[in-house]
Image 1: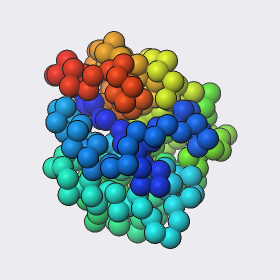
Image 2: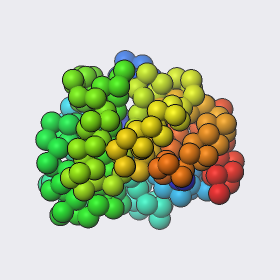
Image 3: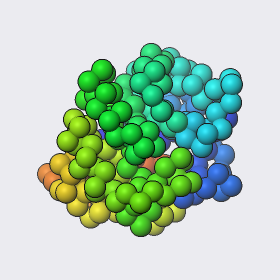
Length: 244
């Protein structure tokens, strides 16, 4: 199981949001490349980088977060999982060209699931991961600011049929709250869909990592950690070493 430290980018800076709320932002640094080097020194195997401006529809003409992606790629050799605001195959191609290893498709595949199939066909299944973000079991879109009528498991099943192999599952109510990860819900989604699931939202401490690791056999492939490693309630080096 992979532990992914998150680097969330807003206007080129490293931030964290509580429950995806743009008004509930905490700044953690102005140099994302330096943050990437820090997590690499702590033993990170992957990085999870989010373009919040793109997800929120506030990217602007100069797209600073895309420049930051290129800087992160130059700073570390780690594979990078990147998402936020990717709405087309051309967007995916551009991000891969900038150095992402794997891209996250969220809102776009809720609105047009067939885009996932086209992305898998063009770029390969290992380069694509679906973002399944949920409020009360329903898929949320547009940086979590809108909630669809689609149950998360239903969309997951559809995407698996279209060739997607894995998805990030985020319980939005837990995100940034240090309230504990939804390990059981993540495992149940893996069982219902056949997708490999990367759990996200609410990770508090090492006990969450252990709970997810114990569920690896049912399809938990990884966990994204954010608020916990930035506030010190979880030590990334300990999480990575204890997960091996």
